[in-house]
Image 1 (tube, one colour):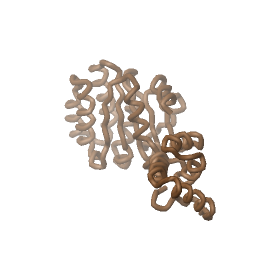
Image 2 (cartoon, rainbow, N blue to C red):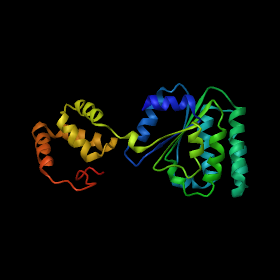
Image 3 (cartoon, rainbow, N blue to C red):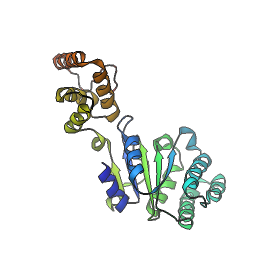
Image 4 (cartoon, rainbow, N blue to C red):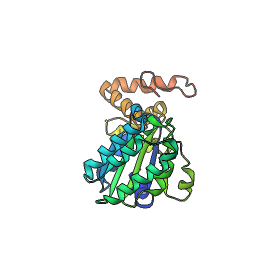
Length: 241
């Protein structure tokens, strides 16, 4: 996954990590950011940031931590007076400010951007922003769904990489490797993978619980679960889906 994201960093202007809670989006983003060789502006988006002035204020503060000369205040002032039709121009203003304060290559991480997907200004703003990002700025978006913008044209032109939940899910060999680190067997990993559907957080929680339960209880759990009829989509009781 890190190699895939590095390929996106080298060739695209933006990367989207799309998946439900617990699929490992944030952990993957953190691991990638730690070793990507760029300055990091990390913005964890909240529901309250649906107000464009609030969004602009926090985004500006994040960028200014690594680029102190970034003049985001001008953008925030314009946002306060903007109508919906003005947001493509505001995206151009943001790009201009990034170009004017160019320095070391920058990775902007917008975590949980899905929190504001319903805001009317998001589509016109990001539709204009993503194609115009400077070559030394890469945007990494995590969310529980694709941004509501016409991304597919960018994706077809290889300017945007979208990594979706099936790609984030653990495979059986990966689950076995994880469970080995907890002192558990391949059989434990198979059961854990079945119940977690490959979702990273749930799989790790199962491994940790089984490891702490002791060998006898962990082995008893395997035999019990293999005898139990499975319902489609059923998850491990007490562990979530």
